[in-house]
Length: 112
Image 1: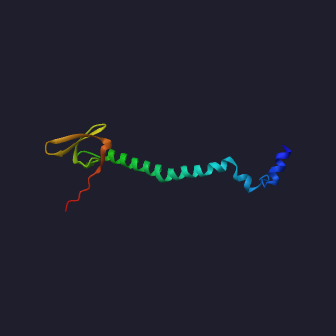
Image 2: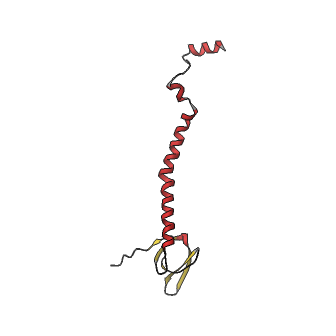
Image 3: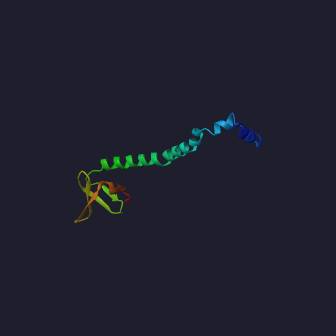
């Protein structure tokens, strides 16, 4: 063993101390991964949760006679509310039943 240590020292591979030794600490190797997870959380996951909460709140505030737009682009008026669905009138005698999660939002009145 002593011979290997002498050869390594002669080849310029002296025992590392101080900052060099800290750089090889396994915890420092995990630091970039922790930073990436933190960035992903604050840039993607947190805003998505806020958007989902806002959409859920909008769905609970919908009531009869509200004009809505579905994710498929259908414009209509809510005529009946069930626990998981809305019945939407899209024409005089045409009504469709749509799952609550497929309502994109409340229609904004842009009449001039």
